[in-house]
Each structure stands twice: as C-alpha cells, then as structure tokens.
Amino acid sequence: MRRPNVDREEKRVTRGATWSGKKYQEELDPNDPNQRSLPTGAITQTSGNKKYLTTCTNTMYPANGTGAVVDVSLMDALYLQMDVPSAQLPRLKSNDTNTSNRLYIDGVEVANGEKVDIFTAVPCGQPSQQAWEDGGNAVPAPVSNADFFYTVTGKCDFNQRPSQTVLTQ
Image (cartoon, rainbow, N blue to C red):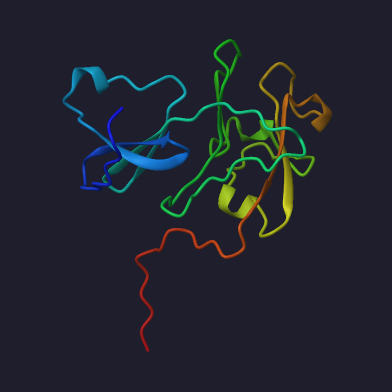
C-alpha cells in the first residue's frame, strides 16, 4: 500500500482509506486501467469539479459502543444510499423522491415524494434514531417493518461547507 498523499489538485480522483487507524487521501490515476473500476462498496461524491471516492469497511459496533465518526466538513451535500440488488428498487437514496419514503427518522416514515437533507435531519447534540426498509415490505408501514436500525448524533459546532455568499457592510 502506498504512503498517504495529500495532493488535492483539481480533477484528481482521490480515495479516502484507513491506514494504521488514520484516515488519509491516496491519489489515484484516472488513466491507470487497474483503477478505472470502483471497488465494491465504494462511496462517490462530486463537489464542483473534484471527485471524492471513499471506501468503507462494514464494522458492526455493539449497541452500547461508541460507533463511528464521519467527518462531513468537506461535503456540500450528503445523502444516505442503500443498495439491495435483489429488491424491486435496487438503489434506495434519501435524496431521491421515489425512494426516500423507505427511510424512518425518529420512528416517522419520510413522506412520499420528499427529499431528505441529512445535514438538517440529524439534530445538534441529540440522538436521532433512524431506520431503513429495504423493499421487502410495502410502504407506508410501521417503523417495526424496517430492516436496518441505527442512531446518529449531529455535532453542534459543525459548519456545512462554506457557500460563495459574501456579506458586506
């Protein structure tokens, strides 16, 4: 494995990875044929003309464990996605008005046709219990029919990626 590279030059594809328990950026060459296909489970995000690629390891934490920390300070948009290849709807996304109603926030199913902004759906300093129905049950349905349950807590001093708005006096 190559050592960390923090080059963030525009139009470079980068991949977040874990190395000795630390997150770093590894530069990928888009012209390298061995790097053209994305790894299984890769998360992609585009912001402006930069592309970010994150790969994750499914780590199951006990219900009383500390869980995982995700740094979203460089993101200007954030959504949840669940891929279920065998389902009638194989890709469920919280920002897709056709599938977001399979997400439950604090026991309430997201309304049909509604996009979910994860930045506002996760309250500051308060736990939010969320769940997904993977498509095996029809919706609307009680949250007890959901398949995946988790709790998230928003960071109170978080600032979403700065906008281009400038205030003058």
